[in-house]
Amino acid sequence: MPTPLPTGPVRVGITADGVVSAGFGAEHAVGAEGTTPDAVRPGDEPKAELVAQRFAEFFAGTRRDLGLPLDWSRTVAGPQRTVLQTLQRTVGYGQTLAYGQLAVRSGVFDAEIAAGQLGQAARAVGSIMGSNPLFLLVPCHRVVAADGLGGYGGGARGMDVKRWLLTLEGVLPPTFDWNGPG
Image (cartoon, rainbow, N blue to C red):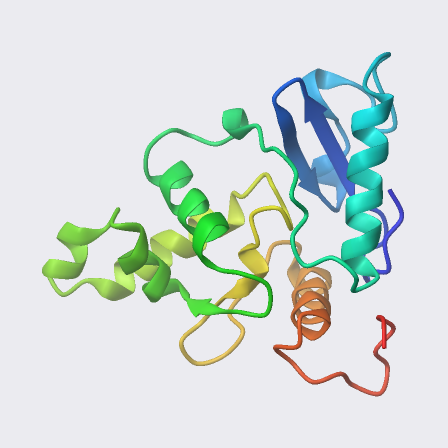
């Protein structure tokens, strides 16, 4: 679907259980269950229309929560899923937290933290953010470094997306080249 993001369109995969994948870039060129990128299976048109509507409203600044069911099957049960679900449940629109804070909040890295290895836990959370198959729905753009923005998948273009989303949500001030909603 088209977006105002610096990377252009977003591809979203939908299953019977909900949104299974969302992302930008070549790695998201295959939809749910191996379908072609722009294919909508017969009977899924209403779901696809709802997803497109919610994303459009979010990018227009009129929706703060996509409110779509999620299919967690492309996440690994255990630490990855726990961290991503903690992020999705506890960090709302316009909020950010540091990688280390998410490590603590998730409860996944209690042993590392007790051993004084918060940095190691924070790096593990960064890796989990990089493996997030549910871009925007699980808002990894809201996870930042303790001393700045941190990273984001997709290199420099990905960082442009992170800045764009954080500007949309009011975390960062708009720049002169801001192309988002007023």
